[in-house]
Amino acid sequence: MMKEANGAPAGESRFDVVIVGAGFSGLYMLHKLRGLGFSVRVCEAGSDVGGTWYWNRYPGARCDVESMQYSYSFDEALQQDWRWSERFATQPEILRYIEHVADRFDLRRDISLDTRIATAVYDEAAAEWMLTTQTGARIAARFCIMATGCLSAARLPDFPGTAEYRGRIYHTGHWPHEAVDFSGLTVGVIGTGSSAIQAIPPIAAQARQLTVFQRTPNFSVPARNRAMTETYEQSWKRDYPALRRRAREETRSGTIYEFSDKGALAVDAETRRHEYERRWQQGGANFMHAYNDILLDKTANDTAADFVRGKIRETVADPRTAEALLPHDHPLGAKRICVDTEYYETFNRDNVALVDVRRAPIERLTEIGLRVGERDFAFDAIVFATGFDAMTGALDAITISGRDGTTLKQAWSAGPRTYLGLMSAGFPNLFTVTGPGSPSVLSNVIVSIEQHVDWIAGCLVHLRRHGLGRIEPEQAAQDGWVAHVNEVAHRTLYPQANSWYMGANIPGKTRVFMPYIGGVNVYRQICDEVAAEGYRGFRLAGAPTRQIEREQRAAG
Ligand code: N01
Image (cartoon, rainbow, N blue to C red; front, side, top):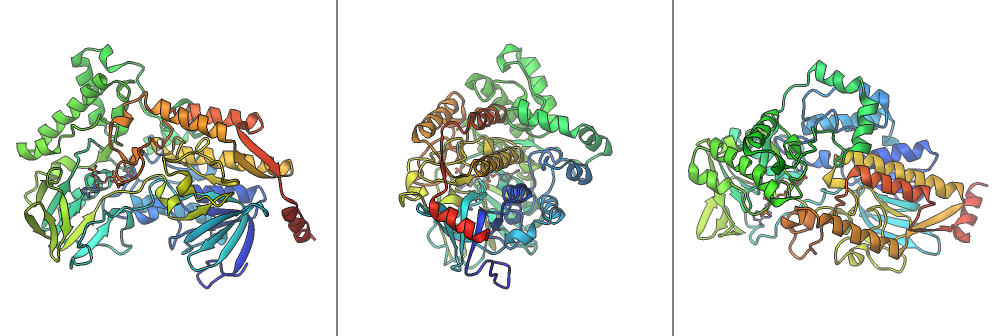
C-alpha cells in the first residue's frame, strides 16, 4: 500500500476489512481480526489512538465507571499487569492505558492516523466498500466496520456572533493538547451535563471569575474518588475472569454494582433514607441501584430524586442558587446520572455564579462575551460543554451510500434503524460497533465493545468458512428489532427526559430512544442465539464472481 509521510494511506489500497476509528472499539477489532488472519486497515481522524479519550482532555475529565471494570478483559496478562492508580481513572491515565494496549499488541502498524474518512460507498457488483479519505486516498475492503463511537461528534450550538467574539473558545469534547491556564481569567461555561459537572470545579479553582450558564439542572452524585489500594485491586485481580464473566452475563449494565432485589416502596421511608445515605457516602453510580424500580416507577424514582434534591439544598449555601440547581424536569437517571467531585460545593465559592438560561436563553456571542436576555457578559474564555450529536453524529459525518445509493443518513431520517444495533438493511457488509439499537451507552461500554467485536469477528469467520462474501439484515428482522427496542424503552422512565439518548439535544433530530435498554446480559444471549441459528434474520450470500476472480488472481 502507498502511504503518505504521516502514515495515512495514499492512492488506492485493498483489505479484507477496513475499520473506522482507533478508540477502544477499533483497537480491539483490529487485534481480534488480525489474529484471525484477516488483512485490516484502521483509519483514524485523530493524530493518535484513543478515540473519546484522545479528544476529551478537559480539566477534571475522568471515567464514571470504576477503573477495575472500565478496561479490556480480552487478555488475562494485560488485565493482571496494568495498575490503575485511582478508583475512577483520569483521562490522561485512560489514554496511557489505550496507548499501552496499542503498543503491547503492536497495533500501530495497521493504523493510519490523521486519516478522516469522508465517504463510504458500497459497490454492489464488486460486493465491496470503497472509502475515500478527506485527502482523496481510496481504501477498498469487503467489510467496513464503523468503530466511530457514540459520543464523538462534538456539538457547538449555532449561536450568532461566534466569529465576532475576540476571546478564546473551547469545547470540552475537542480540548487542546497543550495545558489551558485559566488563572486570572473570567470564564463562562455553557452547559451542566457530565462534562461541565466535571470541568467546573477545577476551572473555578483557577479562574478569577467563573459564570455557569445552566439551561437544565442535572442530577449528580459524588464520586468519592480515592487512590487505588492494593487490597481493592487484588480483590478484582484474584478473580478477574469470573468477575468479568459475571458483569457480561449476569448484569444489565455490564458493571458489577451492589444490586437490590427490592422495590423502593417495599420498604419504609426511614429504611430508604438510610440506604440512599449509605450509597451517597460510598459514591458513584451505585446509588442508582439502591432499589430495582428506580428507573421503572415514577413514585419510586421520586424517593431517590427527593433525596438528591435534599443533598443539593444541604450543600449549596445560597438558597436561591440551591433552588436553581434542583432538577425537576426529568426523573433521576432518565438523563445519564452525573458523577462529580465537589460540583455542588463549587457554587459556594465567591468567584462562581450561576445563570439560569431557561427563560432567557443565550442569544448570541458578542465581541466581548455572551448576550443573555438583556444582559451582556464579558469573558476572556468561553467553554462550551454542550455535548454531542450522540450515536448517529459520527456516522452522519461520513457520507455512507448503501446498495441502492441511499445514504445511511436518509435511511435513518426517522431515527436509526438497525438489526441488533450491528447492521442496517440496505448496507451489506457494514457493521457498527455499539451502534444504535444495542446497549452501548447504557452499559459499561467496554463490555459492550468486546461483545460486539467478538460477535462481528465470529460472523466474518463464519462467512469465510462457508465461502460467503455478503451479509445484510432482512427488512422484517430489522423492523422487528426496531419495534422491540422502542417497546422496551417505553416500559421505563427514560423516554420522559429530553435527553441525548432521545436525540432531543439536537434541533430537528427525530426523537427516538436510540440505545437498547433490555440489558447487556439479555442482549448478549439474543446475539449468540442469532449466530447459533445460522445468523437468523440476516441474508447471507456468496461473493460475486468479480471478487472471487480478483482474489484468485491475488492468490496467484
Ligand atoms: O453533554 P450533555 P456532555 N444553551 O449533552 C447544554 C458522557 N460523558 O458532554 O440539558 C444553553 O449531557 C445542555 O442543556 P440542556 C456521558 O454519557 C461521560 O456533558 O440541553 N445550554 C446540557 O446542560 C454524558 O451523558 C463522562 O438544556 C446548552 C449541556 O449543554 C455524555 O457524555 C464525562 C445549549 C450538554 O450536556 C454527554 O455529556 C463526560 C444552549 N444552546 C461525558 N446547548 C464520564 O464518564 C446545549 N446546552 C464521567
